[in-house]
Image (cartoon, rainbow, N blue to C red; front, side, top):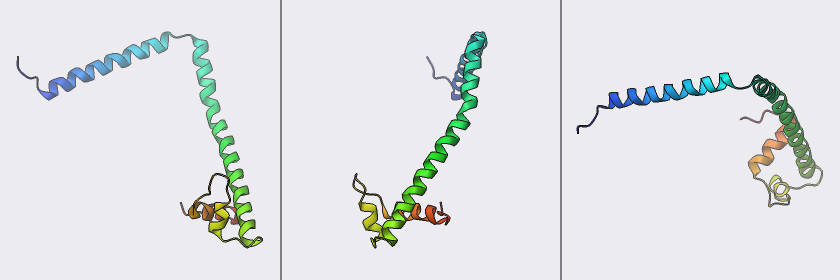
Length: 110
């Protein structure tokens, strides 16, 4: 029993992949229409949900920047000290700098 050439094995593999794709496509087309509409509706809502999440994250980061700015300017803490005050042990100096730049409207460079 000899070894098959790689090209022949690749063709057989590709035919198998195509066969699976055709089976899946035919299964999808025979599925119920209501399920398809539900899926389309959910997919259409994703950009809105991601947009709302992004707004929430931006607002939280802006508030954190404001708090860090207040700690450094008004309370006289250095940036490293203000980063260490978090309950879980702190954030990096790089993150403190990024958040403060968000508050001041400077580009964060990344």
